[in-house]
Length: 444
Image (cartoon, rainbow, N blue to C red):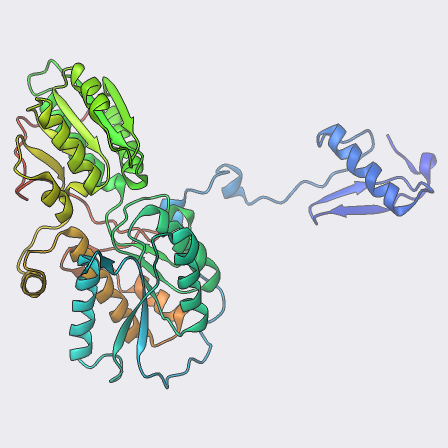
């Protein structure tokens, strides 16, 4: 034990304000004292040496038993500065950034048209204090490169008040990185990738029900098909490397295993840009599946489903919400067997005006992506009208407006900014609820 008789007066050194460590007074240089002290801590692995006196770190009693933070039930909000900053009101228009593609070939995209319909309605009702709302595009085919640069310029060089868009998981992560530093809200209209809100950026809101909410009804439909007679069946999964499809597949397979004790006989993956899918399809059908799950983007899903039909498969095909997109229906053609996917938008009385306006412009009804883009734009506009042009206050208003009724359903944020709306059923290719062969109770 170190005592004064050994070393005389011992100075007290504090490490990070949390530990007290008695260091013997030795006549060596300051630099070498630091080096020797660091080496001693590394070698001793935090156990200390004889005579070393450590003060216990102060840990709240509640956290002492719970060392991990559970983000989804707890989350964080923005408590920083900015709400009191004066914002110039002498603008000719109120710009909202659109982080997504406006054009698809020579035609405007459905999500852009839906967002513009919401802007036109708001401007016809007076805009923001008689100033029109304006949608400003920031996008390129390379969102990690020039697309992000364009969005950063809009944020810092123009008075953009909020961001609409990030229509897949990749671009959503880019938007989250930017708004975490720039401090303005982004409402994600289409992606359901839960790794984005779970990044815990208090400026990010995901309007689409997350993968963890879309997976259960589809898992129930798969289970009903496979074990309707109580004997079980063979499940085969055919997927691509597309980001959002991969994350949804994880939730679906996890839910099947946890609640229904079902695992796939085979899970075959093909590259999203692969032109030839025949080898994967032949291997999948060689397993004689009773049910087939296809996980990919809208275009790749259509290509894979057409391939399995061409190879002779006539059983039900299950897939993600991408099968509810218009482009999937167009590329698929006439169905050979039933196609079942999570139903994220069912037109009704509240959406009749939007459906009519959209169909008048496009010539066909909107899919769930267009409907959610319309709702996201309306939500941003209502938040700006309620909070003014101050970005942190707009962010507060988006959160405080919930529960908010849109044409797609009730928007109610969980603590990490993800919409908690429950997905209650699945849809078929025709958009009608699929009828399970039997009601399969989940395994506890």
